[in-house]
Length: 123
Image (cartoon, rainbow, N blue to C red):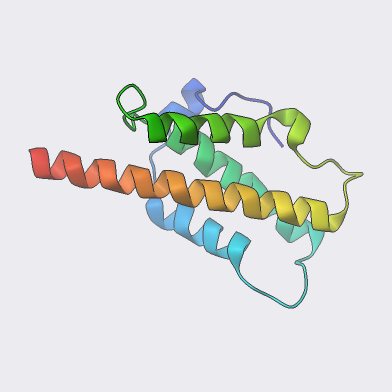
């Protein structure tokens, strides 16, 4: 998985496609009787990390809202490279990390949607 920061210029240039975020989150959080294969976990995690970085590059009211500040702290904690699964990590550990990133991406997407709705209402 990448080593770029959550606010890299590349992430800032990517458009936010909420449908893609929703699809990746749904894959990560789908309830199943078996843990997905490791390649599926890895691919979904890469997608989610990319979505999360792009969402974190947006202006979501960080300066004004303590709840958004707490969300960003959680985002930086989750994206910390030392927390990410490695090749040696168990499949279940990688699965749990994927779900954690998915849940966080969903929360960021909700804040982004609210900000977009507010922008539309304001003008």
